[in-house]
Amino acid sequence: MTRVTRFILPFAVALVAAGYGCARTREPVPSVPEPSYEPTSVEAEQRSQPVTDQDLRILERADATLSDPAKWDRQDDRICAPEDTTWSLFCALQRASVEILGVYDHRRVAIQEVRFAIEEAAPGQVFEHRLRDYNNLPTTRFEDVQAVLHVARERVADRLARVRK
Image 1 (cartoon, rainbow, N blue to C red):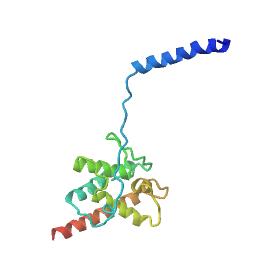
Image 2: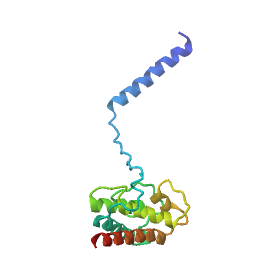
Image 3: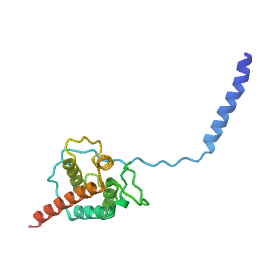
């Protein structure tokens, strides 16, 4: 054995042993599951999906959540927590969906209608995530966020009225 090997080998063994001991006694770190969002489909992008009273309630609740500019989070990261005190457009819709349905329904008619309103409010704009990216545009104002919610709400209410006739 060379002099260097005699020096390095005990050091390496000590490091491995120390690491092994830590790995055996360390508590597992709880993992936070990544939210999974259903990718869009041809069916979800159809504007003729059946609408329900719950869709209207989701939009009304999201609108109430974003009733004041101080409640708007203009830097959406699509991470929404129950204890949040400000909400992006996405988080307001997610929160409303959970409150009304008990779960978040990513492709729900109410939420799709907001996406469609965004496409019309920002024609030609290419978004990876329409709700997040529209919310985060430097040119988007609080009034713009309210406007897409109002357009979606009016459309859902109109569709419901036609169904009830």
